[in-house]
Every structure is written in C-alpha cells, then in structure tokens.
Length: 308
Image 1: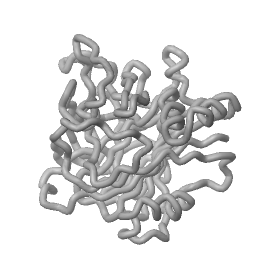
Image 2 (image 1 turned 90 degrees about the horizontal axis):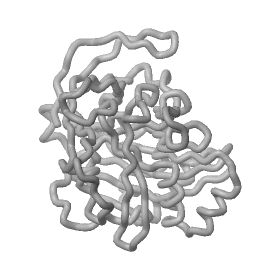
Image 3 (image 1 turned 120 degrees about the vertical axis):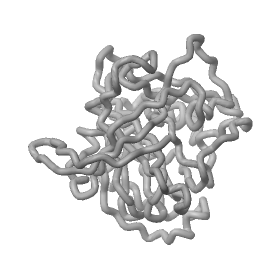
Image 4 (image 1 turned 90 degrees about the vertical axis):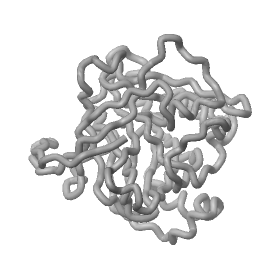
C-alpha cells in the first residue's frame, strides 16, 4: 500500500469547520471470492495478506488538533490524552501488562469489564502465512500491523472470544444477564508512530452492506467471528467509489490513546436488523511513502468486553 500528500481540506464535524491535511492512501479492502471459503486455521491471510483483496484509494484525514470532535458513541472511535505509569520496557512482559496496564485502561464507572487479552506489535508486514492463526486468548507479541480493513469482532464473536479467554459458562452468564455489552480495542503506540499508522473510519459513513462476517476457527477447535469490509458494498473493483470517511493521527505518541468500538448490543444493530446502524469503526494500518527506513511501529492493544 502507498500514499501521497494532497492539499488541505475543510471538514465539518458537528457545527465546527476545521482545516485538516488530507492524504490519498491505498487500503486493502475485502473482495468476496466467487466460491465462498470455509473457515480455516490458516485464514490470517484474509486479515494480513493479499487473499481476496481489493486495493482502493481513499482520502485519509489527520485529526491532530481537533481530535476532541470525535466521540465513541457518535463516530465509533475516540482519542484521549492519557499517560501510562508503564515504561516502554514493561510491555516486554505479559504479566506486567496484565497486572499493571489492564487496570490503567479500566473505567471505574463500568459495571463489569472482562479483558480478552492483548497484542504487542513490532514487526514488518507479514508475508508468511504457512503457520496457523494463534488463539485469541493467547498473548501475542512481535507481530506486524494489520493492513486489511476489518472490525475485530461481531456481536457473536465477542461472546465466542469471551468463552475462549475465560470459559463458556461466563460467556453464557453475560448473555443471560441481558445488560448492554460493548467490545472495545484500546490502542496505544509504545513510541511515536513514524510509519504504518492506524486509520479508523467514521462509523456513520459505513453501511450494513459493506460488512462481511468472517467465521474463524482456531487450532484448538474454538470458533470466532469477526468482520472484513468491502468498499461500500462493492462486489467488483470497477464498482462505485468508496465513500468511507477515514481518519488518523499524524505522529501519534504514546500519550495518544485510541479507543475503537468493535461491537455494541445497545447501539450496533446491523447484525440484527437489515439496514441497521453500524456503530463500530472499521480500521487498518496503511503505508506512508518514504518511511520504509523509519523505526518499525511498536504498539499495544487491549481488547475487552464491558457490561453496563
């Protein structure tokens, strides 16, 4: 994927007009195959590789300076300025992440939070997909950014991963309680991002027809379900252009926390109702030209389920 700089554009967020630099970047969307594929333990190529890929050029807008205009309940993502007591080297140890960092990203007003695990990224883009995909409940580290436009979980996928991370009984109990259940990915750079930044989509520009549920199967036989994204319901590359509104933060630092909503039983009803609201934010990494020799992007993300 590549990108080029273009002129500054005026964007309207709520009642405020702001001037924001715009990049033209190429992103890896999903192009459904003619013959549907069965779930496979080797399906990471659908997330990180070139299988069933539709390369689409989009406008990417920098939120720097007006990041407060974006809210999790209205846009599906939100940037927060949050310091961490964790030193960068602390993220080399899974137990320190679980014991020290997990509590840092918890909201004390939340009724109940279940941490599904964490990923520490710090590698070049993946090209070898000969190994099975790891289970969601296993800590991952040293892996590459994910360039395919995707959403981490469907509503059902969140419950499936909860069963993997803890047990089926807990997943069933959370369902039975009937509370509003939200899934989030809490994403933080470990150092200032100079290459392969993370882009996020304003959920209001996403339609139900753009989303494709991807059934997953893991080496232990457990099932999962997440979402790959088509460019505005496209079935052929020559179809109408993509209308998704993409945003990123230029040179995002370790104090610039990004929260991404991945599912919400009280807001995202596209899975239950035809034409329903897509309250989750698709996201993907993308390449910046001329940054190939910059330090590899290092980041940590914590995925969690919250009961309200």
